[in-house]
Amino acid sequence: MKGTNIENEHHFWLENDEYVIDLTAHQFDEIISPFLLIEKSKYPLSKVFSLDISEIIDFQNWGGLDPFKPKIQSIFYVDYYK
Image 1 (cartoon, helix red, strand yellow):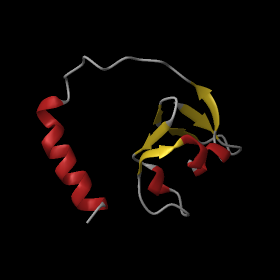
Image 2 (cartoon, helix red, strand yellow):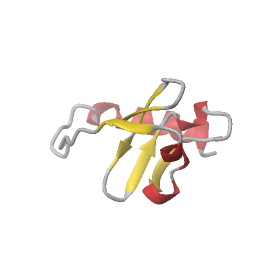
Image 3 (cartoon, rainbow, N blue to C red):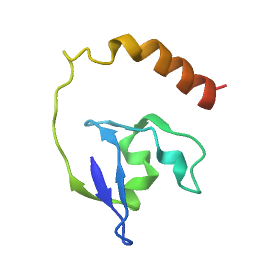
């Protein structure tokens, strides 16, 4: 998803019908960590950014990141979920 705020700044995140994944949410002052599978109704940035672009893409069968998954997970979890 891509959203724009009133200052014409853009932000990107992933979501499905129920949850949001926002790995860069902590760049905003009031947020201290990324969001992993937060319920859409509890996602605070939905009040800040209006939705500009929404694309439905099915990556279910795409394995392009599989070789990198262990390294990404270890770095991410060490930095944010100690």
